[in-house]
Each structure stands twice: as structure tokens, then as C-alpha cells.
Amino acid sequence: MTDNLPVPDDAPWLNLSQEEINELRKSKKKLTEYGKQRLKELMNTGELIDTEKFQEELSKQKVFDADKFADEERKQRSDNVLRRYNGFYNDEVSGLSWGMPTSMEELQAISLSCAVDALICENMNIEYNMIAVDDIKDLIQRLYQQGRESIKNIKEFKDSADGVA
Image (cartoon, rainbow, N blue to C red; front, side, top):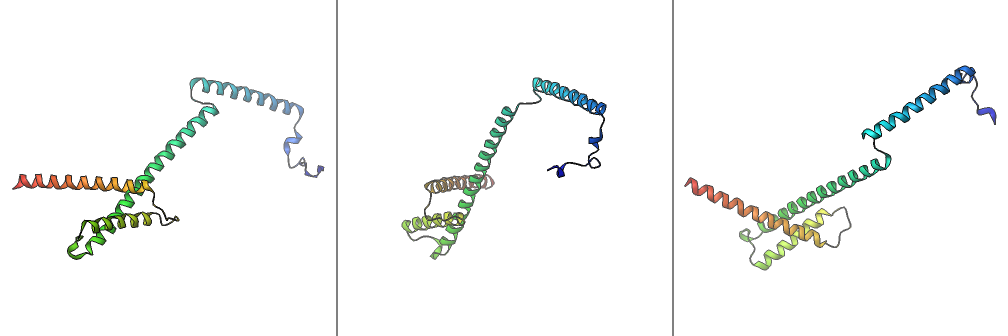
């Protein structure tokens, strides 16, 4: 059982005199008192916060970071779906005779098909056999926004062309 104790040559602190040991104890007490006093000063000045406050601040920061990350991820996903939808739609419509749908029903069918294709492509790494309504609603909102921006650009172009002519 005593085979694992240090040999005096391996541990020079075992060869200390009683006076040296007492000196170390006094130094330890002084350092401990100084540390306690310094901690009190820091806590009183607000430079040091207690563990509970620190944990609370840290958890708030993590929640904020998670929310920020989730919002950025949602925006990126929405941008990807809209970009894919536009790509599929342009490919489908450009393959038609004269590049246009022959009826409103065909245009609606192409639009729905492109929406489904875009959402399936966005979820390739997930087993995906049902489309979330929120994804479709988000795509619809983005298409409305894209349409409004397109009309605004056309209007600005027309206004600037009127000024030149």
C-alpha cells in the first residue's frame, strides 16, 4: 500500500524543516486573505459578477445568438427556394412554344410544379414527402415582393426614359 508514496528525492518538499512549513502556511494565509479582499472589492465595484449573474448573462447571449442564427438560416433558405423556383419556372416557360403558356391553367400548373420542385430541392438531405404550408406561404410572399420590385423597376425605367425623350 505504501509503494505509491513519493520518495524524498522525488519530492523535495518532504525535506522541509518545521520553520519552512510554518512560513509557507503564513504565506498561504496572507494570499488567501488578500484574494478574499480583492474579490470583495471587485464585486463591490461591479467589475466582477457572481456566478448566477454570469450564467444568466451567458444564457441570454446564447438565446440571442441562436435566434439570430435561426433568422439568418430562415432568410438564406427563403432566398434559395425563391432562386430555385425562378430557375425552374424560367426553364419550363422557355420550353413552351413562343415561350408562353397557352392557358392560365397551364401557367398555374407550371407555377405549382416549379414551387414543389424548388422545395424538394431545398430539402434533398431530408426525407421529404410533404410540403410545409409555411414554406409555400413564404414562397408566395417572396414572389409578391419580387413582383412589386419588378413593377417598381419598370416604373422607374419608364420615368427615366420619359425624361430623356
